[in-house]
Image 1 (tube, rainbow, N blue to C red):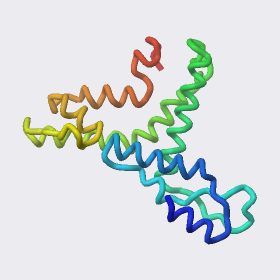
Image 2 (image 1 turned 180 degrees about the vertical axis):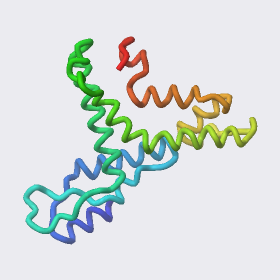
Image 3 (image 1 turned 45 degrees about the vertical axis):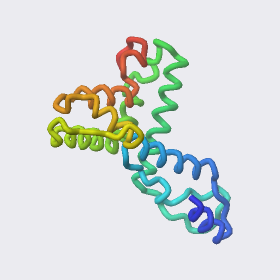
Length: 170
């Protein structure tokens, strides 16, 4: 994060600190939860709207993940404001599901890999109490052969878990 600041300041250009902190937070959270970060800080920082130089295109995988996750949160919040009438907002398409499809391109392989690792361990899958990711600890609680964790965690992350939507199906 510091090197990104130095690089941008070296060019005499300002930095959107909110974007920078968001990238750091996303990297830290995904590393803690899944054991692999989305590498948001390796992407190009956005330039301010007042910048008059050449702006390189931004097409980094972390940008797609972070943007989709942010949009999904906003759409879920809007659904909450409209209570059971939220379906009228998403009449033609499920906006949350579309955004979560993008984030799941990163998350699903990690969940499946963790479940496979437990299956390969044949019952000797140990995670140190003070070490490991949240995903490691969740996988440790499964039998390693069912997709229950994958389905449950994916449903929760997608915001479609029944308890999260008070019984409404998306």
